[in-house]
Image (cartoon, rainbow, N blue to C red; front, top):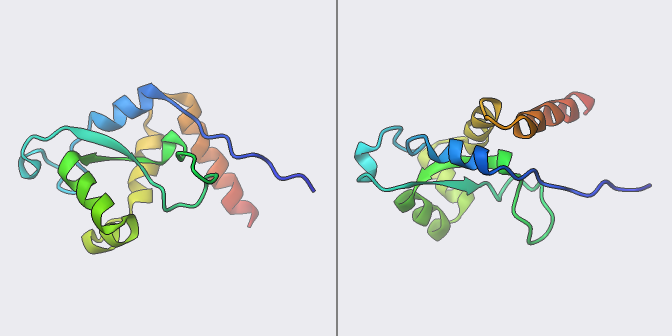
Length: 116
């Protein structure tokens, strides 16, 4: 049996789209002191090869300070403390992405779920 290689989709237009939104933690720029928003790749989802960055569809919008905190305490702990499901945010952003290849990754995810 041959296992398909994981090939993440890369899209600068999607990353720019993600960064154009306010921080997902506060949903407004006020509580983030106007810091720039980064596109954080969700590494805890497990759909990646060792030492490879996840697909750009698995990114969320988060300000620089919250991003640093996330890396300091660890991804799972950070999301649990904030009571946020980052995968829902990433899927919502991917569904509205300007990049068709990113939008298509959601279709593939949904097909894999219905096969289980």
